[in-house]
Image (tube, rainbow, N blue to C red; front, side):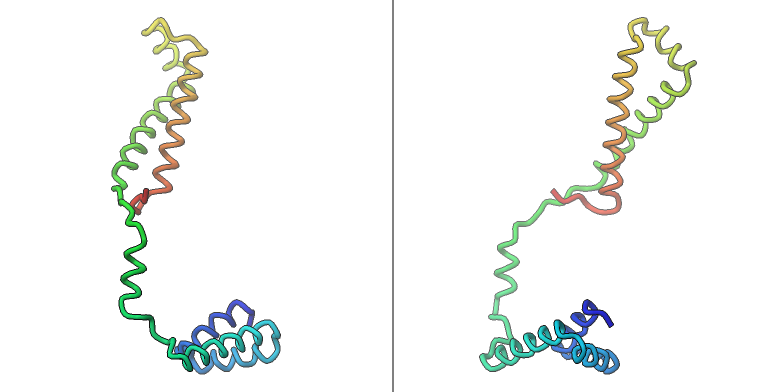
Amino acid sequence: MNCKKSEIYMMQHFDKTIKPANASKLMKHVLICEKCRELYLTFDESMDFAAENNLTEAPSGFTDSVMAMIPQKKDYSPAVFRAVWAFCAIVFGIVLALLFNPENYYIVQNITGIIDSASVFITSATLLFAAVTGTLLFVLHSGEKAKV
């Protein structure tokens, strides 16, 4: 058994929720591992001190007062992020069509008459950046509400 697992078993031991087989593994590990033995003894002393001084229960209303101090965060619907993602995906598709299909590029250039190669590149790069940003927003916030 490793020390990390031992710590989990120690918590279960002192909470009196450990299975007998795991208690046996814990005791064997504590006997051979000095670090875990020290931690076990520290926990044991702390539990004894708490019991002797009647510190096993939190004061009434403690949880409510702590929770009241935590600022409430607003939840925003992921629909906004999906809308941004959808818009960016459409723009991304248009940019790809312009960049990788020269026929479309020349059609756009001939229709407008004012688009030159530099402006198409800059516009495409900007739109590509917006599409990637929107996609990242979607991936980061998909399936859960964004917390701001």
